[in-house]
Amino acid sequence: MSFTYQDVGASRRAGFCPPGFHPLHVRTRIGEGEKVFRRAADAVLTWEMHRELGVGIDAAAERAAPDVDVTVTLAGVIKAPCRVVYTVEEPRRAGWAYGTLAGHPECGEEAFLVERTGDGTVWLTVTAFSRPAKWYAKAGGPATRGLQNAYARRCGKILRKLCADVSEW
Image 1: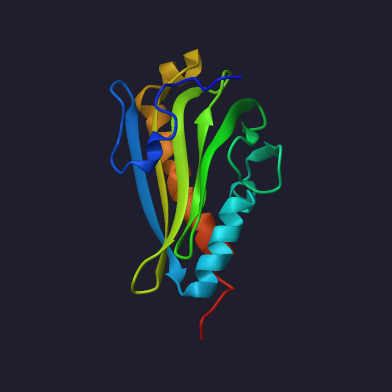
Image 2: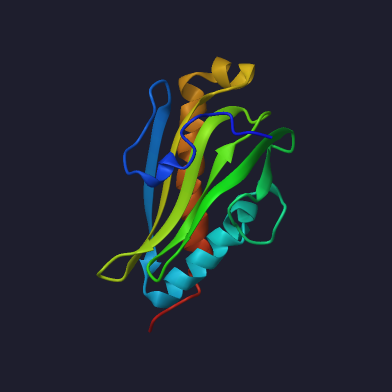
């Protein structure tokens, strides 16, 4: 099965959004320190953050890796097939991006990246470019984009909660 858009991997490029797509950029402070970074990175790379959001995750592997197929189920009904495009596992950055496959309500790419900045602060950044693919996503118009934004903000809240018990003290 092929991706449903042309610019596969383009979410690596800061600020990139192909013509006709809508951009998304949500950044949430998770905490501070190496332990928080490691915990956050693990939660993102193993689908834990997504499962804690309450969405269904049916992944072909226990950990995000390029070419792993993942189906996200929303509200128990909406199936969103996608494939991991790339992963990042560096000393101060970790995460992954998926691209949409046929049957996904949207068309595009979304990335979830945990980063530890120079001052030790840990951030989750969710970036995406997308456009509606299914009739109900098109009918939702701006409300659909609002839901995507709320989903990205909730990712940050859930990840912060998952990392709350980790401390550098």
